Length: 197
Image (cartoon, rainbow, N blue to C red):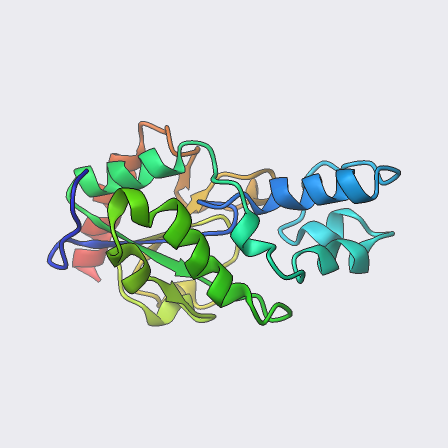
């Protein structure tokens, strides 16, 4: 595996919905514990809004101890991380803590320890950013599934939207999953933009 370099351009990468499959874990817990609630098609960034009659119940699932550490890895996410490295960039986690789950930061770092550190090394955790204001951190790009990121207009990075059903209206450059052959082109374009900024 390619090692990271502090001199390489930084690509910030969100976790929930991009590397860690938040939706799958919510839907699995719903199906197992509340089988009478049908799994709703995804249309809102906040998954609880897809269940208007069960908002509090769905929201409470991600507040449970152990939720974030139990998330499955998004399809091909490890390969995508390696592709960023192999193309001469340094990926760096940039994820928001969940306000209602006081353990989310610790569990996200624990998840990285389990899923990424054995393959890529401890630097993934050492360099990880778990903070609300993603615009405060420098990089050429931020790969994130959230549409309408706050402060994106003032950030140094170009928002590359990670394709999900709830962000189809976003006009940001789009990455269609970790096997998308357009990844390098998107990063090169973001690097040019960053250099002009």
